[in-house]
Amino acid sequence: MSEVFVEVTRGPLVECIHRGDAVVVDKTGKVLAYSGDAYKVTYIRSAAKPIQTMNVILSGAADRFKFNDKELAIMCASHYGENFHVDTLNEMLKKINIKKEALLCGETYSISQAYRKKQMLENHQITTLNSDCSGKHIGVVATCLHKGYGLIDYNTKEHPVQRDTLEVVSNVCDIEKEKIYLGVDGCSVPVFGMPLYNMALGYARLSTGYGLNEEFRAAAKRVYNSMIEYPEMVAGTNGFCTELMKATNGKLIGKLGAEAVYCIGVKDLGIGIAVKIEDGNYRALYPAVMKILEDLKILNYSEINKLSQFKNPPNLNNKGIKVGDIKAVVEIKRV
Image (cartoon, rainbow, N blue to C red):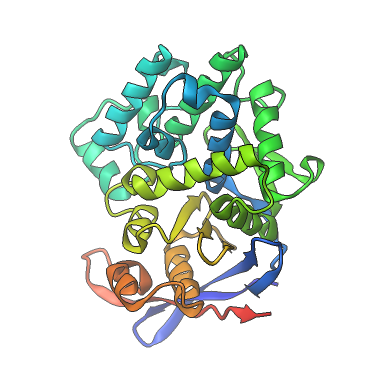
């Protein structure tokens, strides 16, 4: 059963609770701590992007098109579609000589509420490059071009580029591909369903290279380094992924997934963490992740202070006045 992770107060009452599940796994596959169901099966959603980006490297496409670390980082991203993101994406399209209309991710406003408001007020022309998944899609298209695969249906699970990606996800997360559930993500490509345990193990292996062959270790290292070198590419201005990696100076990588999934790989400790808020509400996710990281003593005082806006955010009314708190109460149980 999922546990109570976050309480939302209004005045003197707890008005709402959010339940969740979380697990901490070391690089050898040992469960170190958990709350709720460590083996809860759900979709990893966009938290899979760093692992999916490994396929761009492993295929040879990253080297052929000379993608730099900034460009690899935005392949891992759920970015906000800010101008600096779009500029980077346009440079990538020039490298592969493809127009943005070839991307099958859809045309969407920013996933950042603040930037979305700016886009609407300023009447931005929205294109596929504003999609938070456009970096991933450019990586997939580049891989197709390098491998000689067709582009028309690159988003289907039957397409060879998606079969290749499934093999990489299976390998890194140490789960047989036949046991991975396949759905359709918001950006139209396959999405992977698996136990939280395997998500956490995947991030432990991604951040350390443990259990991976030499080629996979090298690809994992490039992905990890790109994310910590360019954290602003992974989310955007004031985004949790961005601020978490900036504050921790290379100690860890963190990646959001839709419906309130979060995965973390802590390099020196050799551990992975996977968190899922049961009802998919983002307001509960970041406080829960912060408390888990603090309780595990992964964050020091200075890092916690830099991330204070995410730790115990206020519950605001329509006028922006604080009427309560959004407070994490998750208890992580050590094994």
